Length: 348
Image (cartoon, rainbow, N blue to C red; front, side, top):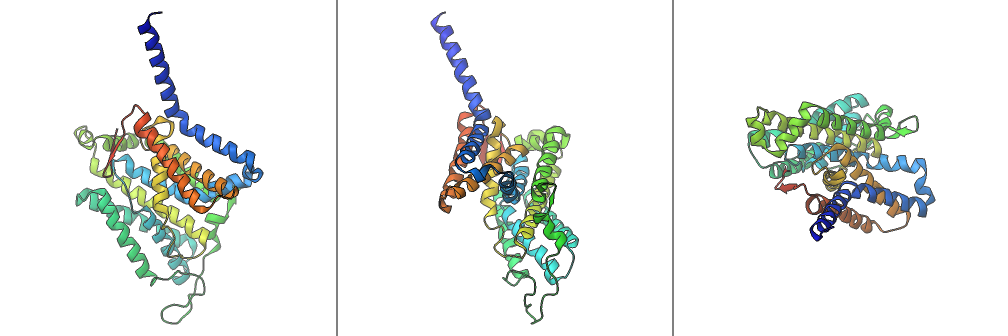
């Protein structure tokens, strides 16, 4: 065999190995971490712990799916954490102060999430404000509005209101079921998380709506020339993001059992992390639902595993940073697909 042929074979083998690392590297890291913690910590491999991890990460994962949806149209949404926190306060206010049942609170929260998404879309699509600036502004508005509505206080049953009376309502059992209920052995938050992931996967990968969303994200002008109503799809993506953030807030509210004014404060960074990790999973090189879900699972495995082996909390943030760094290396350095994120816009 000539020297040129040998070099070609070696080059082809290296390309195949590189493609394999990009496609399966993140999955392999997740499996190896699960295996490591399962061997070193017997309690880690129990079924209850596995469902507990998924239940713990469900609000973050759902908020991450929202960020992922905004990314499909080349945007970003920095208001997801604030929206989830707003949902917690609104749900608590509706039930505790407004003395309404859980179903009413859920309806109010979902309507609020859709309105926040519509506001973001109005600022970005109509007012033509860059998405980073628009959603950053919305984030501050929502945080301030939440504090104004609840007078800067957490809402809990039997609390004393500003007029001296006692709050008449409480968190209802049907609402708390969102976090504490289960169907068979599977907790409700896990079912909601998996159902939303599957729904978004189906919409994005199997419908013309999904193809249009990706087309808008890849090249909005080309999509417009192809007859796609770019503004409609961008609006739908931001409204969907707002709704998903409100669902995350509902799960948080049901978990906490009160209207904690600080709820959702840390959700933004984690949601951003899992959505960015999702871009690199399986070498997709674009936002995708199952990749985002896997990113959330990986972070849950790390947090749970680190806690069980006794690492301090700051090591968990370090671990998340390393995972995100690896994900970005897979997306931008090792992958042959060029994925570019500039000021909130993403193109392949």
